Image (tube, rainbow, N blue to C red; front, side):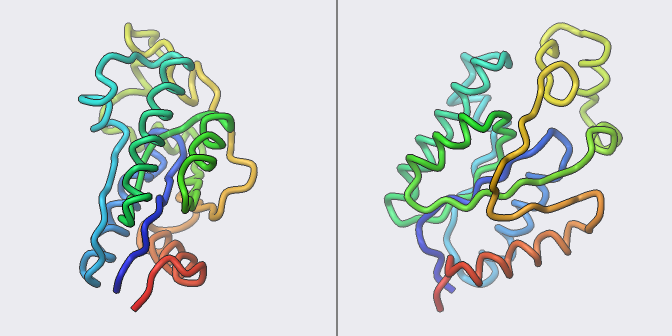
Length: 179
């Protein structure tokens, strides 16, 4: 299977399942011979955006950087998967406008369940107003739900595998891969 260049953009709250689903999809596609790049927002913050904090303005700047990287990769005919909270409609629209082939996946999950899944303890730190967690999505900073994503995965109602299969089927139908 050959994947065409483009970006599969995962958006949602911390703990919603973005990275888990994206990595499972990447593994499935690689096992079928697809070449692709996975860009995780947390990993990119350690390098590309290490100079940024977590205010709304800094988050938008980080997402803009990720979108620019995805655009370059996509324009070079490589499939990439981006896992970034991308909390505002404005920054997601920016990404859609500069990336040649864009497929938006909203990983929807109630904040209460995201908080239960939070192995790093970020939600607890945010609720306790600990330094560095003053602008935490779902607690003190609003996440704007996407208006028209290409697909919504409801991880409180479907398993990881069901989400991956649902996404894979939708991508096939949309012509993202060729034999």
